Length: 226
Length: 127
Image 1: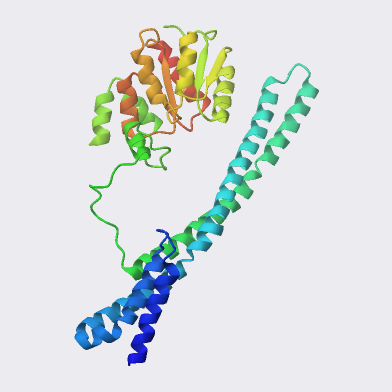
Image 2: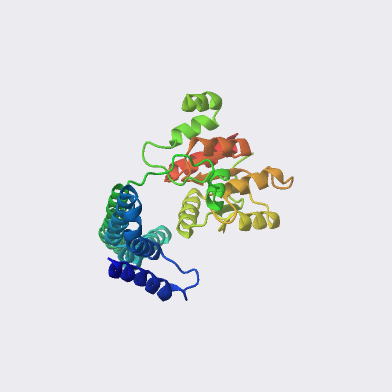
């Protein structure tokens, strides 16, 4: 028993010596490791003091081990180093593709708009060529659709892991957000009423806007809030 | 106030494609003198240098939004009479109410079509 106790203490000393040169750069993993070493080294002492306390500490140790397992299952490094950057690249490619297609379509439309219609044959040839260009440019939708699916898959992957992690750790959102300080972005959004596009069925339609700006505006506003 | 197709129109949007779309629609409607700005700050500078007959502005822009531009325009004695149409994807009730309170002449929800733009411009100048 004495030898085991000595080994536990030696393990604790080794751990502290190994980490003493680190200045404040302590991870959650380090804290859990230290807790494990300490509960291990104190097992003998606490066991002789009160079995209930020992059991509690052992349970804490087991919980910490379980948490480590859960954290590794999150695959946080993979998410941060691979999945999120890849999703970002896909979104950048979508923006580029839609911009390029829009540019091509608008160029074609502008060419048709400014074409000289006095020479019917030449005009018809121009219109036909530009219509083909417009059809070709519309192919971007197929590619961007596939890219968006990849981004959605990444979001689902992250969602599944974070949800499972929270469930296993029994983590709940804090109900009281009263003390949380409003961020600069949130303040700007609130003060300047920046909510962006609304989904179908949400927000107000052009007809409702027209009614709100018309003579019976107040009645329409009252109805919307009714 | 009569609709004059020769009057200079200022289109304010941070999305170049949307400026191009509105510019082309305005050309189709017969307007010839069309200028643009990428946000409220640039628009306000241009408005102080030149008298525009109509401003067509997006809402969500950095650093100065269309809503802030509208309030600045309405509080400036030299600019306050300029007709102002908001063309935006911001379509919450409070957006429309805020714009109305700030003095917008008309409000178009994106996406919109040429007929809506034409109708709203005509409505502004028939009031």
